[in-house]
Amino acid sequence: MKTGWLIILTILMLAMFFSACNNSGTNNRLKENSIIPNSVRVDSTKQVTIVQQEDSDYTKRNINLNQQEFRAFQQTYHLVNPSEMMKEKITGDFNGDGKAEIIFMVPPLEDTLTKDAFQECIGGCNSYLVSSETAMMILKVHSNLGGEIKNIGDLDGDGADEIMVYPSWWQSNWNSYRVYSYNHQTNQWSYLIEPVSIFANELEKGIAFVKKSKQPGFVSAYNSTADSDGNIRSSYKNYRIIK
Image (cartoon, rainbow, N blue to C red; front, side, top):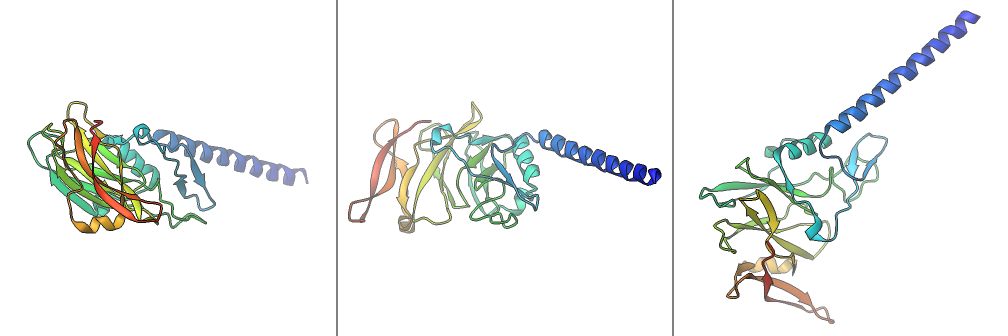
């Protein structure tokens, strides 16, 4: 009888030991990744997804990732190779070195695995602009399911082309397009101007949404407003370069 209890006790102790080892291994693997989200949810399927908590102030957002950080992000969420996800691309001299680069947009993956997930993405609903020039930083475009990217030329006279991104989102006729500029001295992307609100139908006009202004230190950007009756009015307005 005593022998039977000893066998059961030994089995229980071994089970507790191996369980502790597995938990320790999981924690070590998480620590090895350089990008760990501030807030995550884990359900019974063990699929990790980020709870989107982007700062509403665009000036406080971290929009630059290096190659190592981007690879760590992919590994954390088990994402496929970017080349298999690239939907949009543009060509231009975006770092001002006199040579043309190709910028690819890598959109997010909708979370279809997590129980009760609704309009969420694996690792956050952000897109990434990856350059064929691997020395350039990767641009993180917050709250963007894909959208449109355009080379809008050199607007600030530094010899590098700027990028306009019109994000797509789950449900909205209004959004704000962003204009980004690359500084080859600091090796960083930054906003050229504040995000500009526009009604989605205006995209069909095929106009230049951002162009040079006659006023030094400004660019002219096409924006939309709605009056109290819901009428949409769009026009060009000068926006200060904040780069």
